[in-house]
Image (cartoon, rainbow, N blue to C red):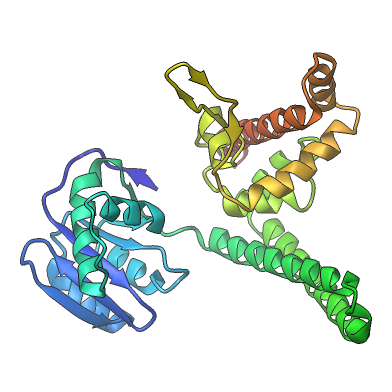
Length: 318
């Protein structure tokens, strides 16, 4: 995605639902409800090609057709974080919520916040595919964990056979997804290069490497602080006046931290420079939990640097 620093004068607010898109045009002040279909969206948006920016919210995929149409018409678009937009609206003390009202607020948000909004660009097909496969694997793993907990419940023996059969089916599906992920990585040079760079880091194995490729495509284009923050490994200050509170890691993309924690554990138990780094922190009196957090941050920073270096070497190898 690309950052534009210029302020804008005209914007489209687009509130997306499963079946329709409510559009507000800041130029005409008109609100229009459009069927969430490619042909209808194209017909409605084609006369609005000269608008500076369009903003919609992420809605779990219902916005995909709209984004594709806007990209095809060369209308810059920002796919906003619903929590940030909601906080923006609340800052005005407003509570009313309907689709036309939301579309109007999205248009105003676009004009007020345009210098800091990232413009959406369609991902590479291979990136979209691996994101879907990794997301599906995470869902299956979560289902298996739930079923395993049910099997341990006091009354689990009443349906134990059915639960075991479901767990076995889930394990088969997880293995199938993992094979598909590996095949996809091997079919694309860019994914192969990134996966090789990640797997060269101690502790990063077959699970974390595809996860980072899928959930942090920005790796290699960030500085170390941005990478740590995006992975939820950056300690944020909580100081006020004379208070200097303990700093805690928070935020980031929630799928990454659990897998990164396992990778840090594996690296700390091995014989490698990362284990030496962890042991040095422990010998210095740092709590093991804090040392592991520092190791997680170091792993993601190394991953960012190695993917960047691999990308820089790529033109020389082709």
